[in-house]
Image (cartoon, rainbow, N blue to C red; front, side, top):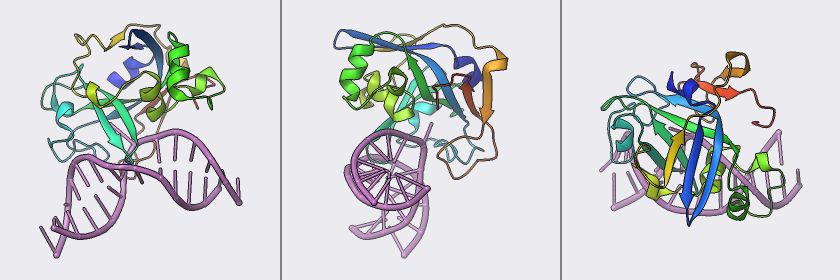
Length: 178
DNA sequence: GATAGGATTCACT
DNA sequence: GTGAATCCTATCA
């Protein structure tokens, strides 16, 4: 499952000349038709169109009218599968992240330990929707340390009301994750 | 054309 | 622990 493989990978962004990166420590898998919690389960639409591209594209959408969430498309073209990045561990550009997140953030690990937070910390926005993570100069993925199975926890997905029976949330066993 | 609700976060009690 | 902020999209009349 791609959501499992993404744990430990490094998400890198460059914005305004500042490079920021974070190690992925929490993900959630969303399938296409058949997964009632997924935006794509009713088929392609204006909003979820990027999910139906081939794997490696970015899907960025607005949630609750105020926060953006970042997904990595994980399926083949037409499948509608994607992985929501829920949390990263800040690596490079921590100063830039603090500047974007504001003074309220005390600990480094609070900079990006949530879907809406990491998007702000890394400077991701709606302009990154549809981006190809293999060729876009603003955002991409790099291989990182593989997280051993012993440190990976699986749990039900968070913040959804349907499809709760699937344990498709993957968390790297990091105490600060949440 | 109108309305309900959401893959969240933060301040406040 | 509870509730508000805020707006786009899908769904229904």
